[in-house]
Image 1 (cartoon, one colour):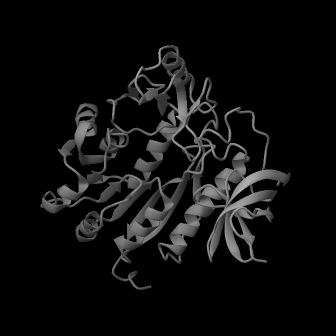
Image 2: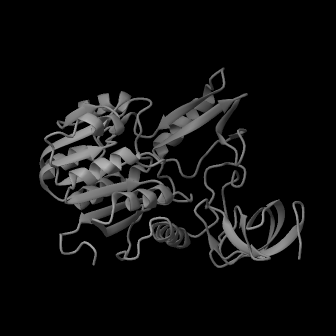
Image 3: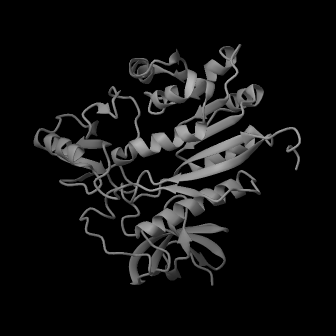
Length: 366
């Protein structure tokens, strides 16, 4: 059957994909349909058809799959935030693990992986302690799904009570000029750390302590830890309890917060600039990486191979760039632990933490 854009088709959704869409098959093509759930039988309109894949717009759910649930949020489907709110939490967690596993095998070319661990959020709603709110034309809310339009939102189910109050205050006195404003449930202080406007911090306030403790536990203990992309010190303070010395690298406003929040030796620099000149004399037992979504620059990974620490811990917010970087770190390291972090429930985002152990001479090539 030959079909093109505008055609209406019936599809059975097989699974969820890295971008958040449901995956179905149409004439052998992978067909991506947003806002669907595994097991759904749907009617959809094709919007893009290529030789190997297609994209479609959901028209109606003809038969809901077992993973689908009712949605109480009036903004769902228009707001660009919670694209998995219609999917049961257990299915969300399983899908994130499968997306990560697929990336590590397909992109990272990893043949041996340990059993995945999980770190669940204590709450799947009212957890978000920070968010960017768009203000435009009297509307205050979040950007629409696939558009720059502002969806006017009175109450967001994933904001924690403090952040919801900030949203309400902003709605009471909206800015006159179009802009985006960061709201924070923790009022600028998070888990005892200073966080200036513009500095990055993890959004799930209910998971902060358990998250940081898990990552630092992966790092182990010793004389020296090197932390690249250290942010405001989310992990740094805890690292100082396990290591005699900590060198933390960050730049800009976050570096100023990092200096205020920790006793570590703070290097105000990008990771890329630091590895060019700052590694002399350093012999860390562990290197902790927490890069942005784009992952690590190849120069950083090359420097890690040269340092040859016993352990590398990589905290990631993108499965594809994580898998690429793990492959680039090289065959001298083996993935020892994988933790899938339930950082942003109701969304497709996959956060994880990996421990890579350096192989002994006898283990290399096994």
